[in-house]
Length: 97
Image (cartoon, rainbow, N blue to C red; front, side, top):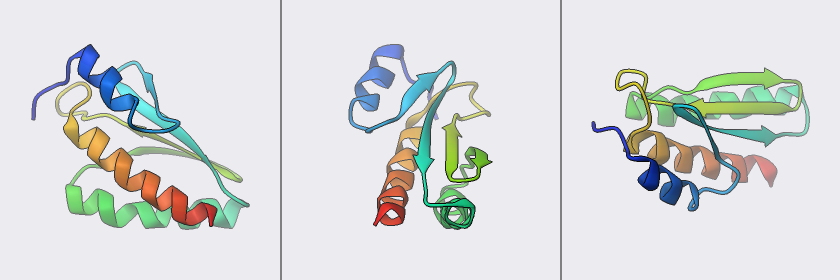
């Protein structure tokens, strides 16, 4: 999987609400109702991440989950990061309902 150019990264970020670039990764903070909601949200991330063989870095802080994505094996951002970000966004939308 090829690393993405800066211009392509910026264009893809425009299609993802709330995601921002942080060095060689993209990240987003999801706000949930409480700690249990945060842990449940993280549990829902397992299936799409495992299906893709692509695993996010996660930070949990009571009612917030920060998700960071990077293709560590490639040393930066690839299509896989943006594909998984879209799947995670759909899970975040479900959690907000």
